[in-house]
Length: 173
Length: 232
Image (cartoon, rainbow over all chains, first blue to last red):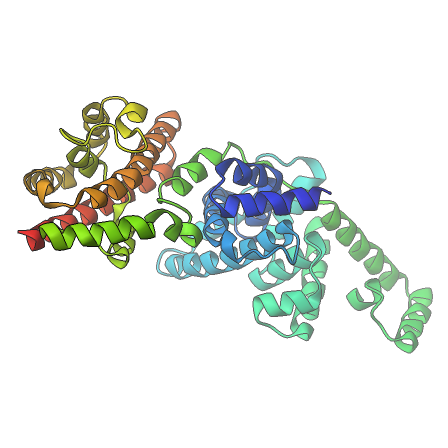
């Protein structure tokens, strides 16, 4: 039933209904923001989240209701994060490399205890391993979906997942 | 081992794995630790942003005339009005915009608050959407809006506004109504953006957004001035 209401709101939003879009934002901002924190960093997550919802607004006309709105939005979010991170990486490559290291070592402000360790450990993973770990173990993507999204083979996705889990185990030890 | 956790190993291979695990304490411990990592990752939930991000999103999505996928709903000339406009143009020789021209103009209409002054000045007060009523004094709104314009743009903005003020009489009234309707939305978006920025002055996203809006305003005024020249 919730999915039905979301589809209705998505159609209303596509016709310019800001209130309907705000309801969709309220329902999904937590998951989108968390994805941004985990795949990029906390400092960039707010801007990325805003950009994702603005992009979603602009692309609502392409949402046909075949999938759930949340699934559609999440795909859009992942693609936007990957795109923006690539841009950011190129920019940082021109600057000193220490900034990125300092940022990823920074603990999450709102996490605590073991969750903090887990969030921090995610940011210690190499980028590709982190992508696969977040998408598979946290977000529930399949290897086929990850392969398509990241432009890698299913075998690469599986090997990166195992690499990530082994590193996480080590970081959390 | 991750394939084993996912249950994706062929039966024979899985059997060999289990046989090995039965004998190897190190691998059993590794497997348990990997399963713990997976369980903890699956338990991670959403995170609330440290502040409400909706204000910045709302300011941006309200800035365009309409969502891009529905843009023609607002800028398209109603058929009747378009026919009347064409007839009027033929009769009077006054300048009128075709639908494609208006569509192109809509791209740069965003943030044309100064043009709103030009359009809703004497003779245009209280347009079809009650622009002046909705916004209060148009002059006051635009004056307040201009206060937020980047200083480096201010001189050119004022010069273009003067040019357009002199040229406004050559525009077709139907064109003016369409512009006025769009500009009412734009003016509201500018006001909303500024309010959001006032409430969250440290928000760089909003500050950049407002700056971009004024740059688009300048682009529009330049384009409108060229259109005015064509009508001379």
